[in-house]
Image 1 (cartoon, rainbow, N blue to C red):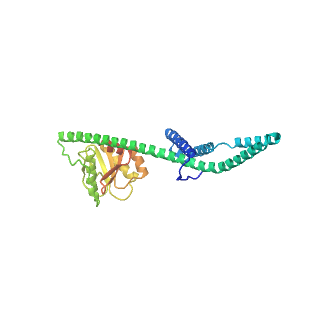
Image 2 (spheres, rainbow, N blue to C red):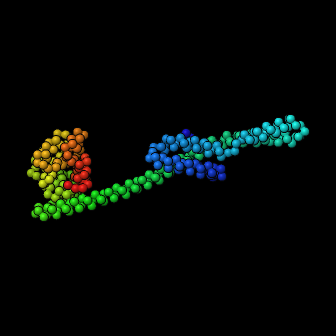
Image 3 (cartoon, helix red, strand yellow):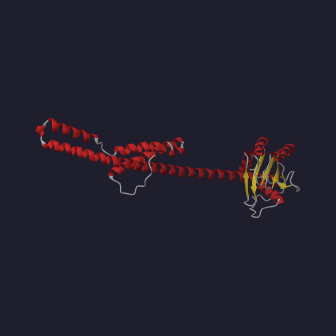
Length: 304
């Protein structure tokens, strides 16, 4: 594969035509790869095709020298076979031979150089086309993501308003429905339970509240429809803890939610998916809540 060379000199008319053709071919190759969805093709098959295209364009930019050689041979033969033609024919034959030699030498030097330039021009066009398309796709995806986030926010707000109206109609006291503010210095285990209760209320379960404090077990936050366990420590949550919560939820006929400040073992996530337990990771310092499995993502999107 030829080395990419920056072109800094002024182009000849022949080079300008080759540059335009190479750029057009580069765009065509890029369009074909984009249409096929093969973004990796830029450094694979496209480069290979551009090598052949550059060679063809460089080779075609110069006249063939075989015609000059044939004319010189014919003139030499005429000078020998028909002496009456005189010295003028012989001189013409020599001149044609010299022209052939000069063009051949020039071609041998010019074609490889133009070939490398054509490859550089073509691949620059390919990369520019890919960059423009990638920027367009990123813009489209950002717009789609923002539209989806706006839709989910509206859905959650409508859901929250409905739950609040139902709670007020039933005479149930409704707590703060905002999400918790970041706590730069962290929270205690009891503070984590209050934080999770506030998260549950902000997701739509307006009656969620902390139960009596326990050392590190049992149900930490509960409401009419949900029970939640909160683990505020450095270790990963294992399958045993999720299984225990799922058993309590099944007995109480409520939906189980698990909140931790760290993460979950692979076995715990797999069991939670089967048992219908929503898994969340919270950050008190950043004031964020992240769903871990699909059920939690559904609750986070549409509310509890």
